[in-house]
Image (cartoon, rainbow, N blue to C red; front, top):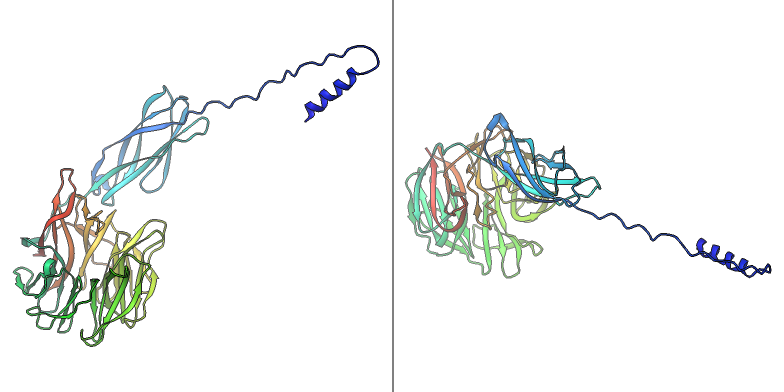
Length: 462
């Protein structure tokens, strides 16, 4: 606007009465300067050395060298940033030599947890441009061997899902209505269930043993020798059961309504009632436990804001409780009561509670681990499962171990192994030994294992 007014003044002056023609000078202003070209750095590869270390190697910490290959058209990369697996960041100066080059940076990594550790890398140039982040993984593996566990039964044509001790015998349940019993956890006898439905969970209280599965509830009152059908609900996939002196509480999923459900019987299975139904949840109730006057139910439902459970004092009214809070995806898939307190575990880790309402998170030596089974002998608590199995994803990494054990209420844990490529889905303690039931997984060429084409296995401690 100011330039236009200036030219208008010159034009008026040229029309003056002095008879001298005024000359209007052309606009000599230069066009706006173009911004300098941007050359955003681009990381093309990161190689970690070593990329595999043993648990507690280097007394709990090792130095890892990262070779970062990148491109930068501006040849002005200034700094490398590394976000270590523990979340801390380290800055490295970069001496830029050419458009295509690689640099090496070393940093320490903790080896105190077994599993996959991830580090992030990015570059900044002198213009403030940042490259995309590049993630690279380091595997911390357990270097122990199977200790104290012996294979008691294998290569059966059905997989096992759960096991319980009823004070006299172990009762294991699985695919195709399979039921096996053992008085010592060593020798097993198959029993006739009378059904071909998959049996997913089993619980005992007093003389009653209740097994549940796909559209079926079975009852035995003679230590698993004989079974009767107490309920066969159409479209109900039942995956969890807990008993007390007056109630059977069963959880699962209603496929027809696509809703999470809890049903109860207060007359030893003669009649049943749906007491809790949540159509907003597309995962089933996965486990149930009773203790200290409360029922606690878990679900494989994923949450990006912490893990949750359901709690009920009477089996009828259920309240959802926030167990852990955070920004990472979390879920709790199993629960056990050890006579004093509840323990819930899943991909999100481990938490404990005396009343089912107030929970304390526990740190464990495992990363990316899905806890799927648990048992206690009154002093030792064992949690077992697999790395990255994701339960319904049926994927298991081959790191070992099979689980962790604690004798001080979850303050400290020790890793243990059962067998590589084995997934423990049910566990119980009785007659002086722990029993684990599950499946042998199919091995892949890359060292991972898959759930498909597997066979049932039973292990017990010696």
